[in-house]
Image (cartoon, rainbow, N blue to C red):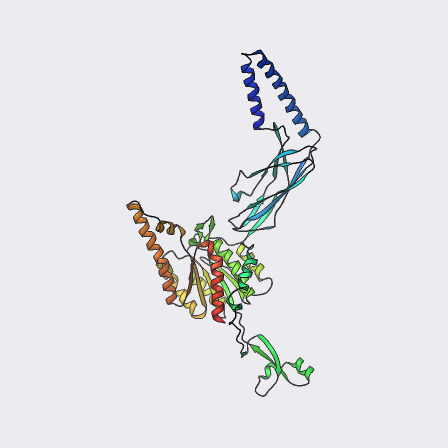
Length: 437
């Protein structure tokens, strides 16, 4: 049993009336009457809420088995009131400790024998296992002197995966790119790749190895397979998990932004007919998912991304080069997510990137520092702020210089805000695809 604010206010009024009763007999009599009424109402509410009603109010939680990291996720609480009178409810859901929210509560009114659904949204910013507790429902009658607590529902466990709720939106973006505009067409040429084009009559000079014997038996004359060069290419996301990726933006690390973008670009690339793969690395190579466009590939990539965590080590690009050389034989598009803070940091890895660029198309993705932008845009008011602005401009200039240095070695780059990463990356990927057609 919990005493409400209304009860203390009523007690205070009765006490004031008793104090005023020293001046007037009428007021003292009124105070006695109010005290008796307070006691009767209190007892009535106790009996109404507790007597013979063990499970008068029930609630249960409905939420998806998986949450999308960095996105609002909907949670529903189903409520049932079996009291024969209207009640006021205060609902407190026991959220997972990762949210660090202790004061999330909802107030609503329910009629007798009524069912309601309470809906709210939560935004996780870390991947992992989230454990919900019980649902606490505090019930009061219209009198409102006391509240009865019902601890109901069941604890539940939800896994937070890389962002997947916007994949359908990215599918629409992929479907409306330059490749589908008038003037762009597929150029078909006869080749000896593995993508079949048509079956035609055999003529002298055709490669006898491509004779289609089944079609030959049906037509009673030699038929041969014609192949065209495959347009599909391998696309790998290479994710740096080193210490520079621990920087946070809007409560999410740069690694989490990279993981969300990797899932989205893998989905879009498979829609465009490419094979998607994944490599994560820091001091050593962690996960390797070979490129494929099989139906289970997205699930494999998502599971691999789910378990990634940053480390305090500086990433080893030599190990990355060796892993690429070992696992990626065909020319591929390699999207490298990292965060070069300075030109010197980039130059330490440039020799490995330049060697990779000789065999593959390289797109290096790194991030703008939004705090530097705020320092540059403000008007300095003292010498200290002038110094901070100059340093911020120097660091911002180095980011642009990194792009120039990479371009000199035939390496593409994308400098972007963390929260714009996914859309900017998809648009850049579609531009690359358009140039290759």
